[in-house]
Each structure stands twice: as structure tokens, then as C-alpha cells.
Image (tube, rainbow, N blue to C red):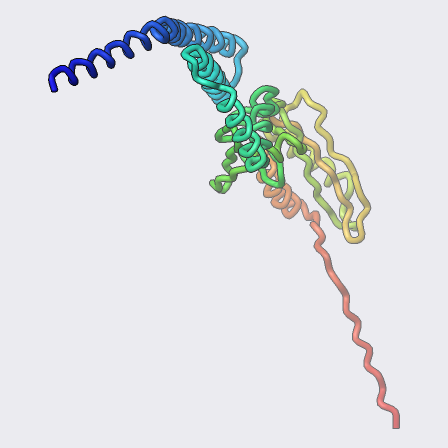
Length: 280
């Protein structure tokens, strides 16, 4: 019994020696490659991060690109290390390729949104805080994520829009220019004093300090409508004052026209009733 145990032990020892001689050098080399490779990857990602910061890439995109690059490099490193110790990697690569194709087909919409998010973050048609209009919605940009853009509307609604449609459609960015033109239409009756009404509108523009006086502000007779003579008022303001000026002008024009005896027509319809005589 003791001889049997000793022979088995010697056999195991011999096998260990053979495996160590066969794979020991490869294993040590693979471990060194893994350690050094991970250090090199950290060094590459750190340099990549500095390059992205210097290029002023959006924070969201920079973080995503860093993580994606690090993951790809680590996968390639582990495949290389596995091949060094004799593990067949061809089948793994084929499996990864097939899985990637299947995932890509299943997530076509998400990949489109991802590509749209990358384009938005790279080319910056708008940024956080801008007031934009797109896809039938308008609001202030709260967040630009990889897959979605989040808007906050004036009535405090949160709108989440996929980036794919945004990147492929028209975008109106109201915040790119520091000033905007407020266009307003006011109508008076055909029997009212045309010149007086025009002068009153001009004085209201001049009296509002928010309206920029160094711009080409205009009061124009724009239309002889069915029941009114319409003036178009064009006033330039700072973007932040747009709605304040718009709403205040509506009120001020109404009060001023009322005080000066100028009517503001509204749609009317005359109904004539004809009485038919009853024949004998």
C-alpha cells in the first residue's frame, strides 16, 4: 500500500514537472504580458483623456469614449494572453463576431440613437441650457445623453427625445444669437386714423427700455385685411427678454388704443332675415 501511494505521488510529481517545463515559461510570459499590457492601457487611456479634454469634447461623450476604448483594448489583451498559453482563440473570436452581429441587428434603433448622440456631442448644434425646437417640441436642453436628449418646457414638462431623429431633422436653436426679433401684428379699423395708430406703436417701442434702440425696429403697414388694417411691429430684444416684451406689448397696445379711441376689430358676421309673405 505504501509503495503504491509512493508511486502515484511520484507519477504526479513527474507530471507537474513536465507541465511546468512545457507551460511554465509561457504562463510567466503571459502574466508579464497581462500586467504590462494593463499598465500600457491605463497610460493610453490617460493620454486619450487629456486629448479629449484639450479638444473640449462634451463630458458625456468623453467618458463614454474612454470606457469603450478601455474595454476594446482589454478584450484584445486578454485574447492575446489566452493565445500565449495555448488556448485556441479562433472560436472565441467567431463567437464574439456572431454575438456582435446579432446584437447589432436587434438594437438597430438604439445604435441609430447612439450615432445621433455622438454626432450631437461632436458637432454641438446645441448645448445644455440652450432653448431649441425640434421634433415638434420646444424647451430648454437639460441633458444631452448618449441615446437621448432631455428638454424642459416652459410649463415644467420633461420631454425625452431619441437622438437619432434629432440628428436627422431640423433644429431651431434660439440661443445661438444673443438678440432676437419680436414680430407682432396689431389691427385697427378702416375708419381709424392710420397715421395716429402708427405713431402710437412707434412711441410704445421707444418707451420700452428692453427694446434695443440701435437695431432696425420697424412699424409697417402689412395688410389690408377683410375687417382690419394690420400693422406688423418688428422689435429687436435680448433673447432673455423675448417673451416679456411680446406679452407686455399686447397689453400696452390694447390699453393705449382704448385710451386714444382707436378700435381693434374682431371678426363679425351680419345675418339678414328675410320674411317671406304667405301666398293665398
